[in-house]
Every structure is written in structure tokens, then in C-alpha cells.
Image (cartoon, rainbow, N blue to C red; front, top):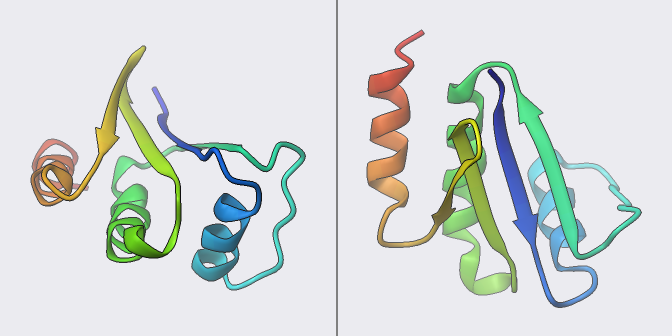
Length: 93
């Protein structure tokens, strides 16, 4: 199963601003209020989560991750560290 990351925003351009910063390239989304990406290796999302939380006050968006089929976790300041630890414990490769 793949790990899924979804980012939602109510404000145009917020997700693109974050993704442009994260990927260091100009990204234009078909739907500027939603972004979804699947990752083969769950540990690949750890850096994305960390940068999202570190910049949360600069963007108006919410991130949701799925490590198991149809179960999504909203990433926030209160759970991001524990979520990252859990990912490394569950997927130590």
C-alpha cells in the first residue's frame, strides 16, 4: 500500500506557495485548493510533514496523511512529532 498525503486550502495559491518552497520549483496545480500525492516509502513524507509544520503560520492549509487504507490523520502542531516518530518506528527501512 502507498502512503498518501493530501493538502487542502480555502485560499487560492496557498498550496502552490508551499509546494514551490518545498520542491524549489514552480508548481501550478489544476485545482489550487487541493493537492494529493502517493509515496511508495512512508518515510519519504517525514520531511514534508516537518517543513509543513515549520511553515504552518505562513500558509492557510491543512495536511492529511494516510498510512493505512481509508484512514487519514490531520497533521497539526500537537501530533506532528509523534506522527514522525511513529512513521520511523513502524517503517524502519
